Image (cartoon, rainbow, N blue to C red; front, side):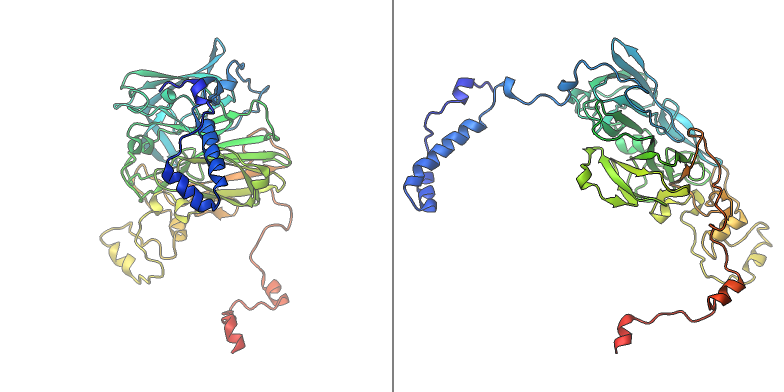
Length: 474
């Protein structure tokens, strides 16, 4: 619709229907209010009229037009991607040019488990795109999949035609075709990218990636160590290699940057570092409460933007919702090897710890001996939970991964899945894994000796059951 600016700003009297005048008079209780009410309506009409184009707010990205491309080391401290990589670029006339290729790949999730997934540039998740606020990019996407695809730049504010939604904002990228996206990053923060054509299948098969946009003019201290981690979940039948993207709740592989613990590379920091951990979640169904041992942190940003310092509260667990990112900050002041994991207990398991018979507390008697007459290698698993499975090194199908986790300094940890370690040391060699923490003398929890028990009047066999508090008042 075309609007005349002169008419839009006219202050001519507004004709008010008689019924509205009578209603206003009854409500106000005075005839003198009718005239002022009519004038107010006339003024409101003038204010809410369409503004001429010159007075409309600028597009979010327009204020960044013409900025030079950001340079790592000069304009920002590069982030680190455990078990991952960065997407390289080249400069063409001041534009950062990237190239993504969607394709089927073989990916090692952990141990001897390999999966046939879909990824970008030979990786799953895809390489991290790292830029600076105001950078203009041109991203080519080559489709080597057997089906159409597209790329949506999740939470990036950009022109509608670059949003990457097949059919709605663009024709899908056909198999064998290369699409092109071009836009400016107007906001700094942590974002993601993924397809928008048959999302259930394509994201479920692994087509995901993270985006880090550093501020052009930081308004808060920047991190010394900056880690980027993508969360995902899968269902892969034991002995097979193809994920099933059609399950809804039955996931048996939970990953950080495509790996299960203990194959997740640690986040290494030095005492005194300001540490950021950028979490992204493109799991098909589940939110993930990520808990960090040894530290309290603050959630300083979401994919919607930074959180004001006055609104930040201390946490030890951050809930990373499906389709969102969360950035946390803490000071590395507590040395050690600190576990960092999803606190959904079934999310810190591996494939062979899933959907097993419940034999906890079962007295099997001579059952194993009798069954071994037919199956010589048979043993009943899980009578005390997952621990006995780890100790027995249970046999598993080919191309599968057992439940037991890392071999540490004090034995074997019954944990896998969505977990990693944050290793803080007084001195580090960059991001190189420093190995296991060397504990100061007499700082490690140990089994109490009989002498210690006697000295503290501790009887391990005493009845320690406590009555209800209200019973002490009856």
